[in-house]
Each structure stands twice: as C-alpha cells, then as structure tokens.
Length: 237
Ligand code: ZN
Image 1: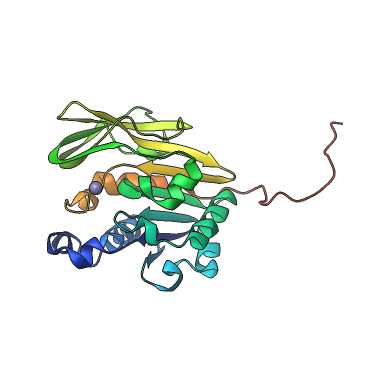
Image 2: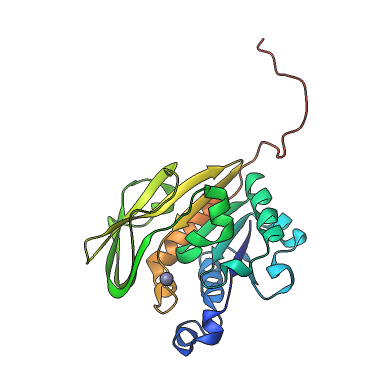
C-alpha cells in the first residue's frame, strides 16, 4: 500500500510556535508515525512543490491520501483538486484531518459548505467511540482525552456520514461529529477532527493510531472500474 501525506506546510514555516512543535512539518510527524506502525511506503507532498506534489504519477500510485490544510485552501489549484477527486471516485482513500473540513477537495466531495463552529480556547476534549468494533476505532478504549484542543462544534454542515465513529465533547459543552466515514464512487473518505497546528496533537499516540487505522480502512478494495465501462446489460439467468 502506498500512502501520500499532503500538507500545505505554511504555518510551520511562518509561525515559530508551530515550528517548535513540528520542525519538519505536520506531514513529517504523521508520515513517521505511519512508518513506525509498519506502513513502509509513505511519501509526503506539500503545496509549494510543483503540482503541489500531486502529479498524475504520484496520485496514480497513491492508495490513500492524507490531507492537512488550513490557511491556503484557496491556493490549491482547481485542476489538481479535480485530479484528486477523480482518483477518489476511482477508489483512492482520502483521510481529511482537522481544518481540511474547508479544503476544496473535501467540500467538493461532500457537496455542502462543511462549515462549523470553532473556538481557540485550549480546553479539554474527549473523543468518544460511538461505533465500537469499527476498524477505525481499533485499539481505542471508550474515548481519547486531549488536555488542550481547539474546539469544533455543531452544526457541522456535512452530509449525514455513512458511518459515525467518534463524537467529541468539549469543556464548553459543545459536541462535534469528530470521526466520519463517507463513500464516494469506489473511494472511502474518513474525516478526523483533532489537529490544530499550535498544539502537539499529532504527537499523541492514540491520534496517530486512529490515523493509521483510517488509512487501513480507506485503502482500495478490489473490484469495480471507474469511469464505468460501456457494455451490455447483465441478465439474470
Ligand atoms: Zn485549527
């Protein structure tokens, strides 16, 4: 399985506080955590590379794409967004993290605004497992506690998820659908909420575990062809 971890990689270069937490970028920490869990073929790609690091060659070899973006969503080229969308419909998995809820690719695949409430308050979050036994929650007992997080709250304007794996609660009383599974074409999409750039969220081993689980869940499965081939009808015997 080939995994590509995409990051816009701007906060880490521009904000010393973020750089201290992620000296080589969020993508680097996520990629390392996947390799440590036995997923060897992990590439990284960033916004400022040619083609944003997502050439047709890279995408065609990618089984699961992880996406982190925040301040530069608008700088992502529409043609490349379409290229990613086509790959998802053809079966590539997509794991959208945190502020990727407003990434062009996520909004295009959802078809809604994907807006939400938020508050930068460094408050405690509990990410509750609401679908025990789901592969994305493998190894997570009851909930993940994060001492300091940015709050995301409902209403989160997404289509009803095909499966809801996590719901977060926050000290301020809000709740949020934090772990959502979607199917688009032959592709699987997982949205996972944690990950504000000024906090060391992606160093948390349980968060890392969920991302690795999501990658395994979202990998393409055999069968099917996109775009659909022209052909004769299949008649019942
Ligand atoms: Zn954030």
